[in-house]
Length: 327
Ligand code: NDP
Image 1 (cartoon, helix red, strand yellow):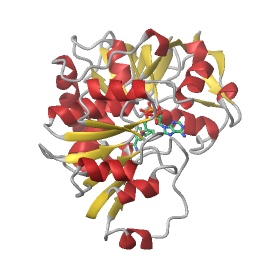
Image 2 (spheres, protein in one colour):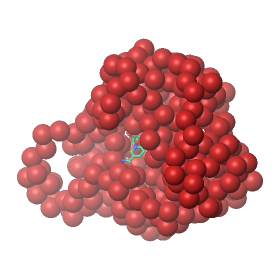
Image 3 (cartoon, helix red, strand yellow):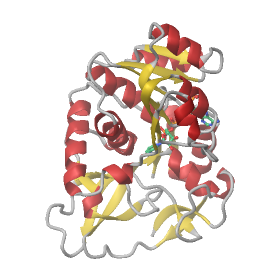
Image 4 (tube, protein in one colour):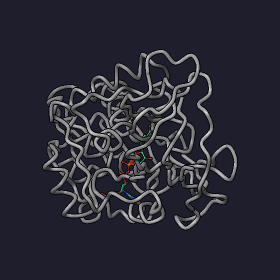
C-alpha cells in the first residue's frame, strides 16, 4: 500500500485528505517513482481551490517530486529501476509516496544534487529558465522587475539574474523577505506593502523604468506593473497568487505606452524531451556548482500527511523560498 493526498471537492486546505491506495503498474512509456521529496507549488493551490479545476474529482494533487525509480513500463529505454530522478508536469498525484510518471517528464538526477534540492527547484527552476532566457532574454546589466522575489520561484530568479550579470529589482511583502532576496542576489528590493512600487522603480532607474516586468502576483499588481514599464515594454504575467487578472481592456496597453503583454506557462515552453534536457542541464549545472542554492528550512518541510498545513502556510505568505512534503 502507498499513501497519497486526495480531495473530493474544491475549497481551502481542509479539503486535502490522506488516503491509502495500491499503486498500479506503470503503463507504456511510464516510470514508477518512490518519492523521497515532493515539491509544493502555488499552482497546487489553484487546482485545489478550483481556479484551475482538475479533469475529475476525487483527484490527486501535485506534479513534481524527486525519488528512486522502482519500476519501468514497456518502451522506456533511457531510465532504469534504481535511477535517481526528478520530475515535473506529471499527471496530478505527485503528493504521494509512489507515483507513475511519463518517462519524458523525468530527468536523471546528478549525484551532486539531493532529492530535497531537486524537488525544491525543478519546476520552479525550469520556470525561471524559460522566463529569463526564452520569454524575454535578459541581458547582462539589464534592470528588470520580478515580483515575489523571496518566494520559491523568486529566490531562484534572484540567483539566476545575478549569474547572468543582470540587475533584478525584486518586490517582497516584509523586511525579512527583503533581506532574503538581497542575499540571493537581487540588485534592489521594494517592500510593496510599504513603498510605492511605481515611484521606487522610477527612482531606481533614473526615471527610465524597466523594459520587462515578471508578475506572478496577478490581480493586485497588474496595473502598477504596467506603470513600471518603458514605452514598448513587455508585461509577463505568469501567475495569480493574489487572484487572476480578468476583464482587461486591451486599450490599456496603448494608453500606457504601446506595451506588449504575454501570459506564458511552463507547459507552453517545455513541451518535449529536447526542451526539458536543455533547461534541466542548465539548471542542474547552476545548482551543482553552487551558483543557485535551494536549501529548504526545516519549518518548510512538512510530512506528506501535513499537506493541509503546508498549503495554509504557503497561502498565508509566511514562506520564503520553496516548501516540501516528505513522504
Ligand atoms: P511563492 O513561494 O512565490 O508564494 C507566493 C508569494 O506571492 C507569497 O509568498 C507572497 O510573497 C506573494 N503574494 C503576493 N500577494 C499574495 C496574496 N494575496 N496571497 C498569497 N501570496 C501573495 O510561490 P511559488 O514560487 O510556488 O510560485 C510563484 C508564482 O509563480 C505563483 O503565482 C505561481 O502560480 C507562478 N508560477 C507560474 C508558472 C508558469 O509557468 N506560469 C510556473 C510556476 C509558478 P510576498 O509576501 O513577498 O508578497
